[in-house]
Length: 454
Image 1 (spheres, rainbow, N blue to C red):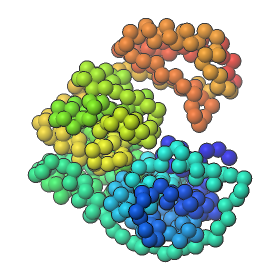
Image 2 (cartoon, rainbow, N blue to C red; image 1 turned 90 degrees about the vertical axis):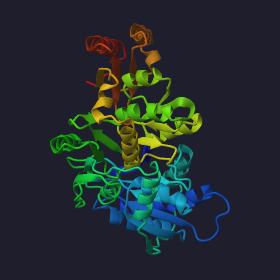
Image 3 (cartoon, rainbow, N blue to C red; image 1 turned 30 degrees about the vertical axis):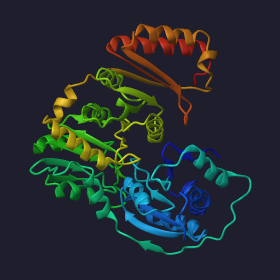
Image 4 (cartoon, rainbow, N blue to C red; image 1 turned 60 degrees about the vertical axis):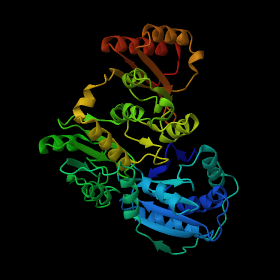
């Protein structure tokens, strides 16, 4: 059996391992043994867990099996219903709960589901805590417990979460008369997101707000922004906004229908926060997938960039270590650490709107204001994964080609962590040059590695 936790919780196709009823119960029980140990001292009384989910049809049954595992440890389970993932992070801290659980596969298609955990501080679990849960689940000694459903304590905290979101905005901030095209991905924020924007005075047209359990992220949401962008331009909106299924990601479109990703959001907000003294240590945290043009743009404005592997947990870790207030991924997972410890799509939408409105520019101005470098992305099937230093001449060839970019581009090459693939990303100012670099590198690898699949 392989590792259970990925970059964002446990994911899989519903009712296939690890999402079988018996194993879901074990996940709940294992979490109940590990996570309360990390609750801050001073808490007394019966342990409490908050549980929320997105709009997938499978969520209710998964919740039932999870709760039966948690019930074996006599937990009080508070059911938050269908609610955005970041709302659970916020409420775990506010309600002083032992931990939180979200049943969601985020941006994945409807046949998938997932289980995410938040510690009592509202943060996603670090590797050490995940490993402890995995050792219980995958160890040689089977978990022995008697499943028990303690009953659910239903609480609707949606208005509390909405009040928190609005509290992060400048005093008197208003979107009165501003037209916003909103895509809720048929997901967890289909009620909350339109309500927050309308409460702020915006004129909102909504798509992707009719979840039926089987249409979450289908042709809509943060991974499918074409419809949102076209509708925004047709309606004459100030902007379009797409959330994903659990509303922890956000993508924009400008008034002309051009799509804007997480890199664009960082390009808009980082200089704005720096100018107002809110960008702590004048730095941001990004993943290696962020465009090199963004890195160059930020550094040109005195903003340092820390780059980490893909995954918002990695971004958060770098922010914690560097004392940074802003970080994110090109996928639209943005963390405004001033207000929240994890990515929040609706918070990102509001903070970006506040910045853009304050600067008095249309969204299209920001898209033109930085230059996105051309990219060549390749993937090659391999039968083994030799270290690059062990492929004759490859390390020297790589170094020579990187030097040839003269600081105006980059080469990022790695093996996939989950598939038998070599992945290559080359960025630079000249499309022809980076294509030639990619071809030369792959030709060398093919000739000398002996690792290519037939």
